[in-house]
Length: 161
Image (tube, rainbow, N blue to C red; front, side, top):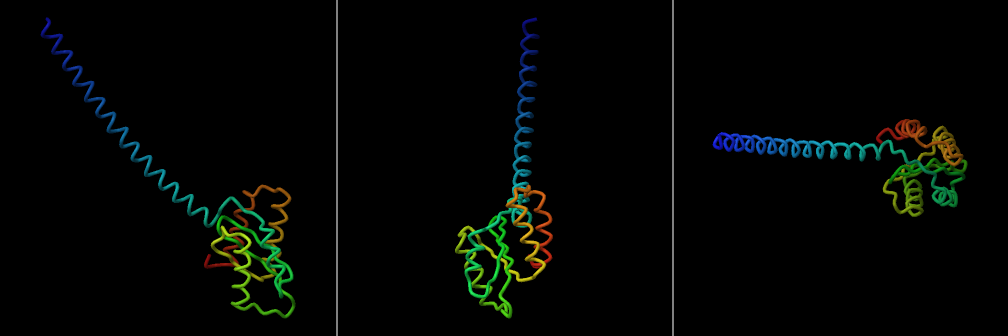
């Protein structure tokens, strides 16, 4: 009888250890899968930040810098992350040149050193929409509701974006 109970205990121990080993492997597999899913999620978040970021803010200092320039009558600048979008109204008869655009980009970047890219447009419709977005943000309207609308507008005005 003693032999049988020792044999039974040994078998149960083997089954128990085998079961634990399988459980540890499954746990490791799940951890690996979770890590892979987490990395993918982070990548998607990064991609979303560039195109459709929920942080949308008015850059008053950049607007002032642009308005202080000769030939610029009015400006509205909104930022999403490291990108800024400026809508400018130029003085009558002013032609937009690459040099003028470069000067405007530099002014915006000087006003906020975290910006990596600046997009400038003098399109009247874009200017009107940007002013509307800025007013809505400053009035405290939830930004989340504006993000899709803003993204569509930006894609239309800057198609390569």
